Length: 441
Ligand code: SAH
Ligand code: SF4
Ligand code: F3S
Image 1 (cartoon, rainbow, N blue to C red):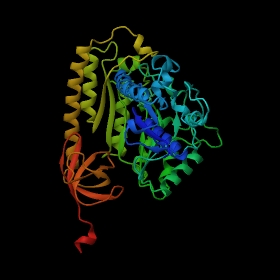
Image 2: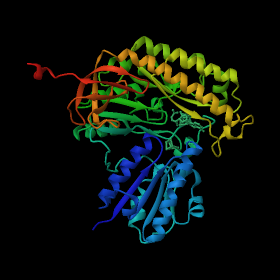
Image 3: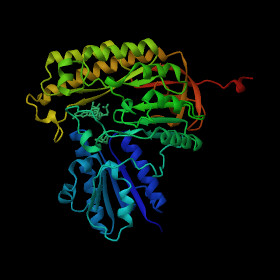
Image 4: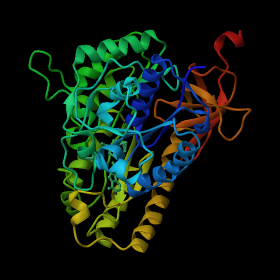
């Protein structure tokens, strides 16, 4: 029997996509996927280091890999991703049972390692061009990722990503269009463009091939078979009018914009080095509301950034109230190694962080629930993803606004159905599939 692998993925969509590429690469080497770690010859972790909790979660899993390795010493344990990059060769000192470690830009080196004679502690941490040639094994046939750039040139003072993913490099537009065409030909109906700062795409391209982010969106929209386009994450500073208008003009581009706020206080934003203030952020929101009135807006917010006062925090609450987000990811500030914010004095005491988080989540959910009522009574297009997580007799999918919907009806994953929405909460919608016309006749 061939060798088996098992991958555990932590972190953001970029890691999900990188894991798909690892799986594709391993299958092309003749490996098969094992359903659990104890059935695997190769145990892989694709790690994240964005917050301390991400580190801890992963280290807890590593314990099991250590035990499995001691039972079968010829098992190979590999650690890839941002955590590996941020600690580099220290991995082998701290966890001597790890055989191979590699950063996010070095996935292809895993193949080199597996084909080499000596399977002893080996680390790969260079920043190289995106290795586009890797095959991918998608989680869902009808949904695909398209990584438009790698790295990040921003200097957000709390963030570890620039040190784990390197400088920003945009990929060639012709290569991206070809990749999107290949995805469409392979059955992908919804494509999500990925970048740490996805809308700064193109600035570093040579003049002859340079197009901006809205230009790229237009090229992807023109591809037959791609019915939905999403992207994540844009930076408010680069959210220009052409990109916002594209949401109104391009049929495939979904009515959803994730616009990370981080804080509603201009003083905090300045110390975060976000390069916009509260007013400029709100101007972006107004522009979105003007061009795409029904657009869903979601965000990321950090509470308890060093020096955040009660008054600063209340400004965050004000913005949340004013914007009326359809949803928000909320994070307690976590000091990260070698970031500027970790060195700032005035760390906010933990109980205050927790108390602010509770108030924030309450407001976010209340406003999201209110916003969601606009969908009740509407018939909305849903891309079916599978059965409902809470009720096996129902189906689950997503709207163009990126709302999860649980509904009654019959459809296969990957199909589009119209659903009449009857109930809306802050998180999900619920309804019944509308009868297709043919069945009524
Ligand atoms: N490049 C993307 C994603 C960054 S990570 C962007 O800029 O939007 C996703 C979110 O994690 C960030 O938006 C931020 O809200 C949060 N985050 C990043 N570093 C953090 C830290 N040190 N502590 C708490 N939250 C953090
Ligand atoms: Fe981190 Fe800021 Fe870059 Fe996002 S834009 S990855 S938060 S440095
Ligand atoms: Fe985590 Fe790296 Fe993504 S730190 S959030 S996996 S870019």
